[in-house]
Length: 466
Image 1 (cartoon, one colour):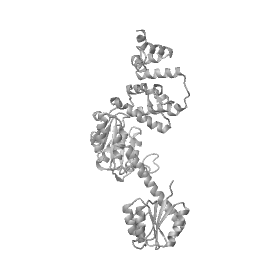
Image 2 (image 1 turned 180 degrees about the vertical axis):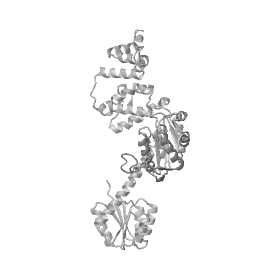
Image 3 (image 1 turned 90 degrees about the vertical axis):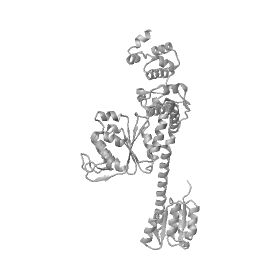
């Protein structure tokens, strides 16, 4: 790691020398300047982690140096040095952006403490900016995977509305990427520097969801031993993502409607009215018009939420995008696991493209994550792919611990998996396996799969006699 670089600007040679010795002992590199003009030029021409700046300087005084420096390089932390315990000059310097000030004669241990705090604070600020920048790059509308016209249109529409404060309602089945789109809207909006918070409206009972959203006062209910700040308050200046909003109870729907209309609410058990500036992005896999007709969802809330409506298609309607998703997830989990898997072989890709994916992109990602873990070679094969209910039999942890299997065991598991994937349709399974039906029937008898097929397909016995 490169040494930190400190600029010391002071017209007293003794002060410059003492501070330079201190920072050199701490392992810092130092530059020195004896007047304001040369100090400002040095600061603007170089890269410094900290500037120690005297308030009283010849040619150009310290406050003017600070003012110009903060205009050109606002990220450099500046600690002012003054020979006078003058609160007026110190306060003025702080208003102009100085981190802190020290008075002559100063304690070197205090100088060290203030300098290290100033540098660490700026490091955290820079790191936060970097991470937010990475989030904006990741959640970018240009990063949408797939050429499906409907999904491309959805993301173009989202990009158009990101700059507004309008509420957005995202419709789509579970696992279609509703949360990813919500994050993209947030991180490409003017609220990107504010928080993005998510609340699942189906994961919590009504009383807990109300407290989660609006907070509560001490004593509002049993176990409310202290005040709790709700997600609306936490999301101030940012975006609140309400996932599965269609599952809200009527009473919480009414409270949410008030927030959308009046931008204010009260905590549970409280009387203080709180104003809030939060953008709402909601998502649901329910047909809200049907819910309105059934009296389960408020029509007025629906119209408040769907100022902008974006629909995401299920994965089964965008089969052409599956190879691109697969390659993306293979790269992602190879990076996480350190494996060198090139991709999915032709037979495996055929299985992936023919599966219905009821869990959509989320299910596909889980499938590929598991396959990368199980794969011991360069290519993911059909035996590494597990679908539907069978996927629950293998967790990531247990998969890594599975020992080598015999070829017969792997063949049996693969044939059973393909049959289940095809809803036990032997003709379709034989086609995927690239064997004829007679060979498949022989394998079914060899591996004693007839009982499972009969349980899933009552007409199996009649079919096998034909």
